[in-house]
Image (cartoon, rainbow, N blue to C red; front, side, top):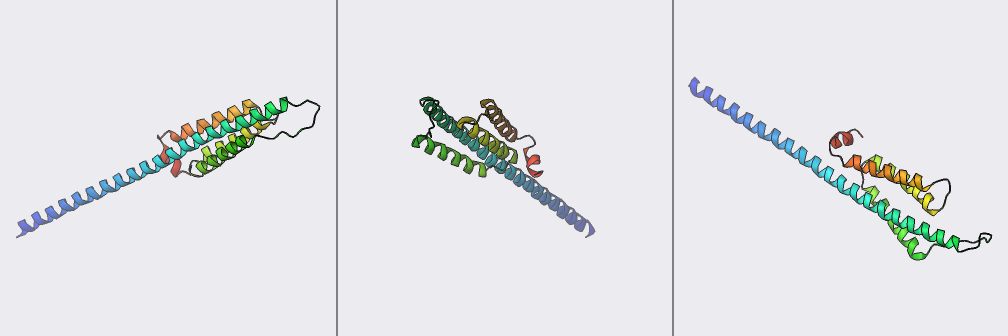
Length: 164
């Protein structure tokens, strides 16, 4: 009987090891799939935010160009308040609102911070502040795009995310 018991114990141990291996493999697969889903969501949010920033940049530039054109049409000695055309102001407001919504979905703090820094400089550069130049805005735009590119690099992405 001992020979039969030993074989039975061996079979139980082998089956238990096989079940344990399957469970461990399934857990590893589930973890990897979860990381991929999280990365896919963040990637989509990053690309949406980058697209929204481009639309906001275009809208701010259009408003700035309209203000500049209107200011040139007025005599330099005249004190005038220049109004932005309603359609351009609405487009700017909508574009910046969309950017705000898209940034709320981004988990990568560096990208959100770079977008806010760019947005502030762009408002001043396009809407008329001599202290913020087009070069400053362009540098901030480059920094935003570099932050997005770094966040999209999936090598080490999960480790950076876990380190927050």
